[in-house]
Picture 1 (tube, rainbow, N blue to C red):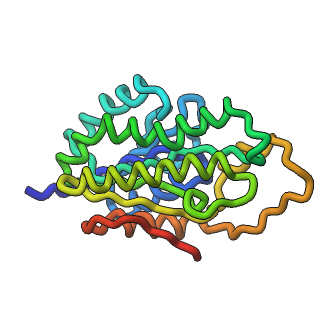
Picture 2: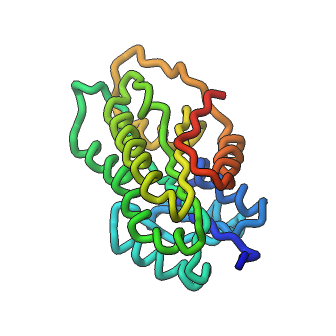
Length: 231
Protein backbone atom coordinates (compact mmCIF):
# COMPACT_ATOMS: atom_id res chain seq x y z
CA UNK A 1 0.00 0.00 0.00
CA UNK A 2 1.49 3.34 -1.05
CA UNK A 3 1.78 6.19 1.43
CA UNK A 4 0.99 9.76 0.44
CA UNK A 5 3.69 11.31 2.62
CA UNK A 6 7.41 10.56 2.42
CA UNK A 7 9.78 11.10 5.34
CA UNK A 8 13.44 12.08 5.23
CA UNK A 9 15.95 12.47 8.06
CA UNK A 10 19.09 14.50 7.43
CA UNK A 11 21.90 14.73 10.00
CA UNK A 12 24.36 17.60 10.21
CA UNK A 13 22.09 20.50 9.27
CA UNK A 14 24.20 23.34 10.62
CA UNK A 15 23.90 26.74 8.98
CA UNK A 16 25.40 26.98 5.51
CA UNK A 17 25.99 23.26 5.00
CA UNK A 18 24.88 20.51 2.65
CA UNK A 19 22.44 19.23 5.26
CA UNK A 20 20.56 22.53 5.50
CA UNK A 21 20.34 22.76 1.71
CA UNK A 22 19.10 19.17 1.49
CA UNK A 23 16.34 19.64 4.06
CA UNK A 24 15.07 22.78 2.35
CA UNK A 25 15.11 21.10 -1.05
CA UNK A 26 13.25 18.05 0.29
CA UNK A 27 10.57 20.30 1.75
CA UNK A 28 10.28 22.15 -1.55
CA UNK A 29 9.60 18.79 -3.19
CA UNK A 30 6.85 17.89 -0.73
CA UNK A 31 8.83 15.54 1.50
CA UNK A 32 8.40 15.73 5.28
CA UNK A 33 12.05 16.44 6.09
CA UNK A 34 13.48 16.29 9.60
CA UNK A 35 16.79 17.97 10.40
CA UNK A 36 19.30 17.42 13.18
CA UNK A 37 21.90 19.72 14.69
CA UNK A 38 24.29 19.28 17.59
CA UNK A 39 22.68 19.82 21.01
CA UNK A 40 24.45 23.16 21.56
CA UNK A 41 24.46 24.25 17.91
CA UNK A 42 22.58 27.29 16.63
CA UNK A 43 19.24 26.28 15.10
CA UNK A 44 17.83 29.72 14.30
CA UNK A 45 18.19 29.12 10.55
CA UNK A 46 15.96 26.05 10.85
CA UNK A 47 13.38 27.77 13.05
CA UNK A 48 13.11 30.67 10.61
CA UNK A 49 12.45 28.24 7.76
CA UNK A 50 9.82 26.34 9.78
CA UNK A 51 11.83 23.11 9.63
CA UNK A 52 11.25 20.31 12.13
CA UNK A 53 14.54 19.59 13.88
CA UNK A 54 15.92 17.68 16.83
CA UNK A 55 19.25 17.80 18.68
CA UNK A 56 21.57 14.92 17.85
CA UNK A 57 25.14 13.88 18.51
CA UNK A 58 25.84 10.95 16.19
CA UNK A 59 28.71 9.83 18.43
CA UNK A 60 26.41 9.23 21.43
CA UNK A 61 24.15 6.17 21.28
CA UNK A 62 21.68 7.54 23.83
CA UNK A 63 21.26 10.64 21.65
CA UNK A 64 20.40 8.47 18.63
CA UNK A 65 17.96 6.37 20.66
CA UNK A 66 16.29 9.53 21.93
CA UNK A 67 15.97 10.86 18.39
CA UNK A 68 14.35 7.64 17.22
CA UNK A 69 11.80 7.80 20.03
CA UNK A 70 10.89 11.34 18.94
CA UNK A 71 10.53 10.68 15.22
CA UNK A 72 8.66 7.37 15.48
CA UNK A 73 5.26 9.00 16.18
CA UNK A 74 5.88 11.61 13.47
CA UNK A 75 6.56 9.05 10.74
CA UNK A 76 4.38 6.15 11.96
CA UNK A 77 7.50 4.01 12.04
CA UNK A 78 8.53 4.68 8.43
CA UNK A 79 11.67 6.38 7.16
CA UNK A 80 11.98 6.77 3.40
CA UNK A 81 15.35 8.50 3.29
CA UNK A 82 18.25 8.69 5.74
CA UNK A 83 21.03 11.09 4.78
CA UNK A 84 24.15 10.74 6.92
CA UNK A 85 25.52 14.21 6.34
CA UNK A 86 27.09 15.06 9.71
CA UNK A 87 30.85 15.35 9.40
CA UNK A 88 33.96 17.19 10.54
CA UNK A 89 37.43 17.54 9.09
CA UNK A 90 41.01 17.64 10.31
CA UNK A 91 43.56 19.46 8.17
CA UNK A 92 47.18 18.71 9.01
CA UNK A 93 50.28 17.17 7.42
CA UNK A 94 50.34 13.42 8.06
CA UNK A 95 53.58 13.57 10.05
CA UNK A 96 52.13 16.23 12.40
CA UNK A 97 48.90 14.36 13.16
CA UNK A 98 47.43 14.72 16.65
CA UNK A 99 45.59 11.46 17.20
CA UNK A 100 42.97 12.82 19.62
CA UNK A 101 41.08 15.07 17.18
CA UNK A 102 41.45 12.35 14.56
CA UNK A 103 39.71 9.87 16.87
CA UNK A 104 36.90 12.38 17.29
CA UNK A 105 36.67 12.80 13.52
CA UNK A 106 36.38 9.05 12.97
CA UNK A 107 33.66 8.93 15.63
CA UNK A 108 31.64 11.44 13.62
CA UNK A 109 32.51 10.57 10.00
CA UNK A 110 32.56 6.76 10.24
CA UNK A 111 31.06 5.43 13.46
CA UNK A 112 28.25 8.02 13.35
CA UNK A 113 26.74 6.67 10.10
CA UNK A 114 27.26 3.12 11.38
CA UNK A 115 25.23 3.85 14.50
CA UNK A 116 22.52 5.72 12.61
CA UNK A 117 21.97 2.77 10.28
CA UNK A 118 22.11 0.33 13.20
CA UNK A 119 19.32 2.09 15.10
CA UNK A 120 17.13 3.17 12.17
CA UNK A 121 17.43 0.27 9.73
CA UNK A 122 14.08 -1.21 10.78
CA UNK A 123 12.27 2.02 9.85
CA UNK A 124 14.10 2.13 6.52
CA UNK A 125 13.31 -1.50 5.69
CA UNK A 126 9.65 -0.94 6.56
CA UNK A 127 9.53 1.90 4.03
CA UNK A 128 11.82 0.23 1.46
CA UNK A 129 13.78 3.41 1.95
CA UNK A 130 17.09 4.82 0.80
CA UNK A 131 20.29 5.32 2.76
CA UNK A 132 22.56 8.12 1.54
CA UNK A 133 26.08 8.43 2.94
CA UNK A 134 27.93 11.62 2.09
CA UNK A 135 31.48 10.63 1.21
CA UNK A 136 34.31 12.64 -0.27
CA UNK A 137 36.56 12.55 -3.30
CA UNK A 138 39.35 12.64 -0.69
CA UNK A 139 38.47 9.06 0.19
CA UNK A 140 39.36 8.06 -3.37
CA UNK A 141 42.00 10.56 -4.50
CA UNK A 142 44.22 11.86 -1.66
CA UNK A 143 45.09 15.53 -1.31
CA UNK A 144 47.77 17.38 0.64
CA UNK A 145 47.23 17.82 4.40
CA UNK A 146 44.07 15.71 4.30
CA UNK A 147 45.53 12.31 5.19
CA UNK A 148 43.39 11.76 8.29
CA UNK A 149 40.18 13.13 6.81
CA UNK A 150 40.75 11.14 3.62
CA UNK A 151 41.23 7.98 5.68
CA UNK A 152 37.93 8.53 7.51
CA UNK A 153 36.08 8.92 4.22
CA UNK A 154 37.84 5.97 2.59
CA UNK A 155 36.73 3.82 5.52
CA UNK A 156 33.18 5.13 5.10
CA UNK A 157 33.27 4.28 1.39
CA UNK A 158 34.33 0.68 2.00
CA UNK A 159 31.84 0.16 4.82
CA UNK A 160 29.16 1.64 2.56
CA UNK A 161 30.00 -0.79 -0.22
CA UNK A 162 29.39 -3.74 2.10
CA UNK A 163 26.23 -2.11 3.44
CA UNK A 164 24.97 -1.71 -0.12
CA UNK A 165 25.32 -5.45 -0.75
CA UNK A 166 23.76 -6.51 2.55
CA UNK A 167 20.82 -4.09 2.35
CA UNK A 168 20.04 -4.56 -1.34
CA UNK A 169 17.11 -6.96 -0.70
CA UNK A 170 15.46 -4.47 1.66
CA UNK A 171 16.26 -0.91 0.59
CA UNK A 172 18.28 1.17 -1.83
CA UNK A 173 21.65 2.59 -0.95
CA UNK A 174 23.45 5.63 -2.36
CA UNK A 175 26.99 6.76 -1.74
CA UNK A 176 27.80 10.32 -2.79
CA UNK A 177 31.48 10.96 -3.46
CA UNK A 178 31.60 14.72 -3.21
CA UNK A 179 34.13 17.26 -4.33
CA UNK A 180 34.69 20.34 -2.19
CA UNK A 181 31.49 22.16 -1.33
CA UNK A 182 31.23 25.74 -0.12
CA UNK A 183 30.19 25.02 3.48
CA UNK A 184 31.38 25.95 6.97
CA UNK A 185 33.18 22.65 7.62
CA UNK A 186 36.58 24.18 6.90
CA UNK A 187 35.82 27.26 9.00
CA UNK A 188 35.40 24.99 12.01
CA UNK A 189 38.90 23.66 11.35
CA UNK A 190 40.50 27.04 10.56
CA UNK A 191 42.15 27.48 13.97
CA UNK A 192 44.88 24.97 13.13
CA UNK A 193 48.24 26.34 12.07
CA UNK A 194 49.38 24.90 8.76
CA UNK A 195 52.72 25.15 6.95
CA UNK A 196 53.27 28.40 5.08
CA UNK A 197 52.44 28.37 1.42
CA UNK A 198 49.34 26.23 1.70
CA UNK A 199 46.89 27.19 -1.01
CA UNK A 200 43.30 26.32 -1.73
CA UNK A 201 43.30 25.16 -5.34
CA UNK A 202 40.03 23.23 -5.38
CA UNK A 203 36.68 24.28 -6.76
CA UNK A 204 33.94 25.54 -4.42
CA UNK A 205 30.58 24.04 -5.28
CA UNK A 206 27.22 25.66 -4.85
CA UNK A 207 25.56 23.80 -1.98
CA UNK A 208 22.04 24.12 -3.33
CA UNK A 209 23.00 22.62 -6.68
CA UNK A 210 24.69 19.71 -4.95
CA UNK A 211 21.66 19.19 -2.71
CA UNK A 212 19.42 18.82 -5.76
CA UNK A 213 21.78 16.26 -7.28
CA UNK A 214 21.89 14.22 -4.07
CA UNK A 215 18.09 14.19 -3.85
CA UNK A 216 17.85 13.09 -7.47
CA UNK A 217 20.24 10.25 -6.68
CA UNK A 218 18.27 9.19 -3.61
CA UNK A 219 15.02 9.11 -5.59
CA UNK A 220 16.30 6.49 -8.01
CA UNK A 221 15.10 3.04 -7.02
CA UNK A 222 17.96 1.07 -8.54
CA UNK A 223 20.86 0.26 -6.24
CA UNK A 224 23.95 2.19 -7.32
CA UNK A 225 27.53 1.91 -6.19
CA UNK A 226 28.46 5.56 -6.06
CA UNK A 227 28.07 8.98 -7.57
CA UNK A 228 31.26 10.83 -8.37
CA UNK A 229 30.70 14.38 -9.56
CA UNK A 230 33.35 16.75 -10.83
CA UNK A 231 31.40 19.86 -11.74
